Image 1 (tube, rainbow, N blue to C red):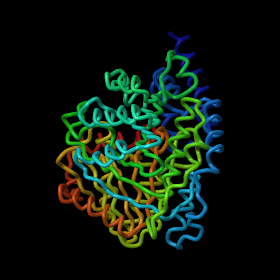
Image 2: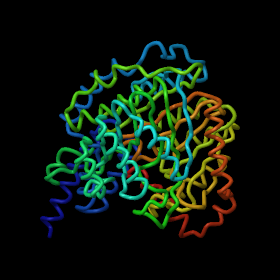
Image 3: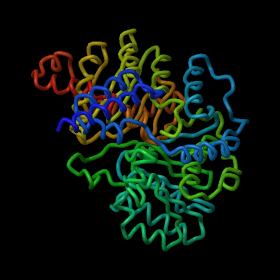
Length: 475
């Protein structure tokens, strides 16, 4: 027993030394892991090995970087590039460029689609009209009515000779990849691939890459003519895998214009990484037509294979630019310290900050952790609303009625550090007004949480929430 204790202390000391020498680790994260390693014998060491580092194999990271470099010269059409943004936008666009490597481009069109299951109708119609290619990437694809509709449209397109390529997350869509719909797509000639496969050897995967890294993006692209993105997976609002939280309320957008090249660049970087097929010159050769005056758009693609920043940095830049109003909708609020402080500081300087969250979260742990931040937000003056009829899964943010961010990224550390995400910054008073109208509909279905109510929570609830909030750096 003495020998085992000694070995644990020795192993813990070695792992703590590794924690102390890791670069790009926030002090709070470093401290939290040291406490876990020292307080929880053996288990803490194993937990750190599995989840303490955002580990991507060096060869995999280099391959992704090479592909992005190969594509980078193709996805920025110079005639539409916004080279002299207004002063209020300059900090936001510069931050987004530093994080994702892409520049704002003008001449786009954005349409917010229905939140109901018929929100997929324009996408199905576009696939039915496809002539050259259809590219699809979803985190979760279910074999339900909506999932089948998308699959059937792709089967029909492939049989007409359209090049259809489908990429799904290996874990998020694992049931679908074993379904009849998947086999039927393959038989029809749809090219299929899985992102972030766990592989034939779990141990080998553990040694080379952190196992819970996931591709969380939602992208559909047709003929360099129209694209679709947002928070929605290829599934019904009933969301059969978590039906008791239904309906799942998402946003889905149709997009036209030069920014489609940036979305194509994101899809192709993923596709080429997982399949080895080099499609860059062929697919990105055509420049999507611009709309005048149109909407300014800028894609922000993030992931654990690039450490230049995250969606969090872009949100912080948007908060810094805010002067009148900020409205944010997110299903998961487990922020970094910097982001939480930025939200509070924005409200404290007089900006009307509204944060819309689901009243009931599909993860009890994440929901309770989020509650640990409520008191600080409310004391800072943030208006906090809890959406009640279903699981609010939309990811939206608007500033001063003129700039918005939408896409797949949540305001949690998983989206910031572990997931592959794609968000889109949109600059347009008209488009932002439409997005705010949708957020107003969420507010109408929500109840406002008061400071007095949170202060009156029983001690056990506050202790639980605050303890879990302390664990935020580990999530």
